[in-house]
Image 1 (cartoon, rainbow, N blue to C red):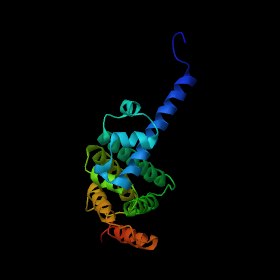
Image 2: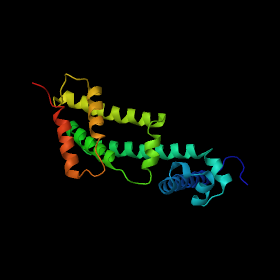
Image 3: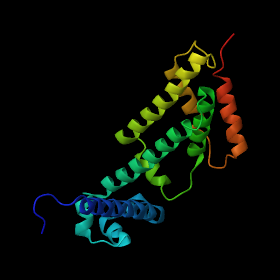
Image 4: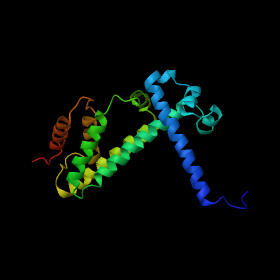
Length: 196
């Protein structure tokens, strides 16, 4: 038994364990939804698929809905981190904008995995709205930087242009080729060019 604080190494090990259990629960849930659909998933089924007891599962999540939201939040955070990473690959605002919009279009076109039915059902939740706002802010900031260099039109506010870009590129379908994505991003960027 420890006197006083738990050593840092022990705390890190416990945190790593909790994180790995949480990830395993989220992964198992996505797989089960892919196999059984949203209504076919139960806490007992998730516990069994994860290899943990139901009591342990309830220590992490109160119900299936909480697990589904946590899964979706993790997916959205991964997407946002990916787009932010893409932005950091170049110092030129116009290149950053093109690359982020291309990354967004590719992500919008990825469909068909076990998590799609989860994402579709959860994408209207408040956690999704926060991420949509963050992506919109990322693109708006890039557009402002492009306006400052004269690369983007000034007759429409950057926030409206960002909404236009994201809406246009969210229509990319799963069968869209890389060449088609590049063409669609090109058309979108052409609409942003300065007028006159």
